[in-house]
Amino acid sequence: MTASRVRFRSAVFAALVLAAMETFAAQGFAQASTSASRTAVRSIPTIVQKDGHFALMVDGAPYLELGVQANNSSAWPAYLDRVWPAAETLHANTVELPIYWEQLEPVQGKFDFSVVDLILKQAREHHQRLVLLWFGTWKNGSSHYTPDWIKADPGKYPFVVGKDGQTVDSPSPFAPARLEADKTAFRMLMRHLATADLQRTVIMVQVENEAGEWGGVRDYGPAAEKVFAGAVPDALVKALGKQPGTWSQVFGEDADETFMAWSIATYIEQVAAASKQEYALPLYVNAALRDPFHPGKAPNYESGAPTDNNIDLWKIAAPSISIVAPDIYMADYAKYMKVMELYKRSNNPLLIPETGNSAVFARYVFAAIGQGAIGWAPFGLDLTRYSNQTTGPEAMEQSALKPVATQYALLAPIARKLAAGNLAGKVRGTSEDPDNHTQTLDFDRWQVVLRFGMPSFGNGMTPKGNTPPDGGAVLLELGPDEYLIAGHHVRVDFKPTFAPGKKRLWMKVEEGSYDAAGNWKMARIWNGDQTDYGLNLKADENVLLRVKLTTY
Ligand code: DGJ
Image (cartoon, rainbow, N blue to C red; front, side):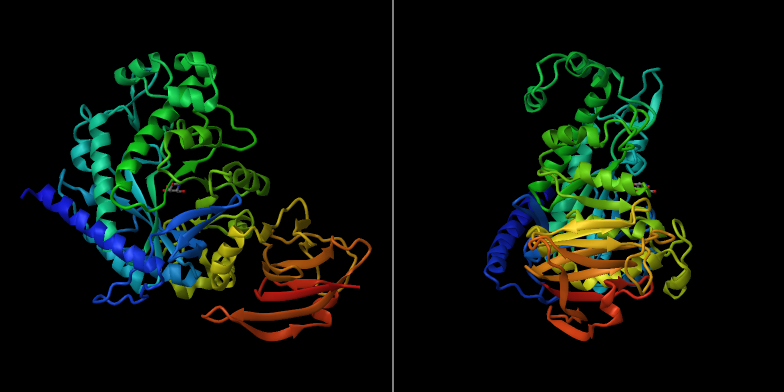
């Protein structure tokens, strides 16, 4: 029997075993053991939607990724021990790590899964879930992670050709050999995970990284030119409600960019679709963004990428991709909120797989959860000293880890509750806006009033805002007049919108925590100074509050 037939047969066998296991899992017979001898059987992570709200289901229940992405070159065996301690210090529940094509397939057709296996093993030992990032054909618009045998043969694996006839440091999507090779490599990775990860340590996979072209708008190589001169595919014309024609006729001045987006998205769809036959994990692509208010035109931003103007196109071209996700490195409040608004759609769950890691970004975890995000992950917070100067967990007080660690410590124990609450539409949250120190969040019966920059005592004064603006809060409705509050550096109060003319009365404000089984353990009741002016959540001590309200 040939090697490929053996592989095929073992894949079929594994699929049958998995199917049987899935049935058991669905019946609730899954064992949560992680011992090597009795591998746990868990349901395959998936994304569900209910009444326009989304959840990433992990082990059969909604999961909120409080993630961290390692630096680009940190996923090597010698460096992994600089990743896990950072994740632990951060109280992250998920680590995002690249899988490098150049490592996985150093010789064409010979796959080395040793690093994948080590990552799986170490993630489990460190009680982390994984999001794997396939650094395949595209990494930040270039192709630097392709194996040497691809780099050495640009005739077979061509670069983009610019308008001036010069090659651009970007892989051409019109490269059948590269597409086939990427499809095979990614498929082999997913085939491997299907059997090597029955524990479902890997919960999502990113296909490529910030695909697109920097420095030009489209490929002008001979193969691309031929396709560009032809008709826009029917599927795209129909889905967008356009009249048929050539790219220039249908899209006018946006033809070049739209053509590039379609070419890249359909390439990635083929990579993704092939892998789904092996293992149907949720797949997503990430986007280098354009300015949401003043985008200009490509090449001001990465052309052909899943930028906000091309989300619809990517959804049409790449149905095997569940999420088009923004990498948000814009610190500005209005821009951050606008980007989330643009990417949160009825057909696109909000996921922020990369965001800034400095103190100003930490507060955005509250707004992201408030917008229903299924995951949020600052980039580069490991101990390799590339994106931050942290040398070890002992340096936490001075390090870039601290602001995120502070928020994750508060949110990690309630992450599953927030994810379930988001699926039910019961979560609201926001982050401090430096230009507007009072914000409101609306639930059915109550309006939450958040004031940033208030003293511990006194009513009636105008909020000044915090310096820096580091506040935020997320609230989960537990019942009609009952809320769980997790927040930072903000005063929280409520107004009864169901009872005009009435005022809020605290029935009970409990500070506490959830035990491992999810039961609330009250530590004390807040009253007197702690409630007379609203609920002052401090900058230096995050607390969980459970609040029951009534009116007078
Ligand atoms: C966005 C990319 O997706 C990451 O891999 C990394 O290069 C960061 N930019 C660096 O800021």
